[in-house]
Image 1 (spheres, rainbow, N blue to C red):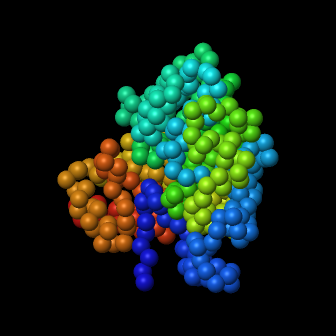
Image 2: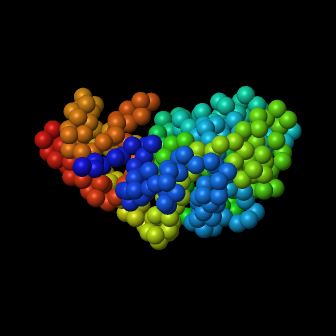
Length: 359
């Protein structure tokens, strides 16, 4: 079997050693004679897996006991509704920053529940920039401020945290575990699993405990963070296998030296690929340099007519899922934690060869 290089934005590449462990334990988990997928979520085996995953994630991100760590379902998109339902606490408005397609979706959903004040937007630059904080028009009495630190589609990333006097809520789906963050700067962090955490089907929410219990009376139990916290994320049957795989990924990150070590590697990968793009007249990246994502790197070809042959030849060369999102076109290489430097090198070599033959 030959593994190919996977640059998908999600579901994304998983560490090969994690997949190998999961494969070896598929039919018989730790000598129990059945797969973990077949075990009751109330069993000591599965609750032990969940506890280990939570403790390892707390260690990786230095999460204090002031925060609840919740393993939920429905992906990050479900949290677009959960955020206002849990945090409005009788207030009429919330502040949102619009820096891309996922910001827009979060804003659209929040408008179902409150007045949304868009404090800043980069739509006029086709989401290639992040509005400077001094330009933001903050609301008078918002319940919270929501932003998306890494816009997966557009490839922009914040490397700073907004400082405001209300809880900061961050959709960190494409940032989490790629580098250290200070959890204490946030009221709520949520992230879909299918980037740097594990397979699709799981979403992690890290919620400051003093923000629990403020839920709207009409909030469904399945979206109520307090209900999830009181039930150790097992109010109903959780996605047990996704949780098991997430725990293996957390162990893998620890073995590699934690998030500081991952940041070093990720910065090296991104710098190498951006340099290959910037030193070429054939390729271009539209994002302002200081806001370029470490995880999601979009690029265009000088001639869009070459997009199709580029993708076809890349796939033949074992480079998969490089097509840009339908809303922006071009190419996108997502270089999450499990995408190694060898994959980046292979992509750069292919890009340079393609340019020589097609320019």
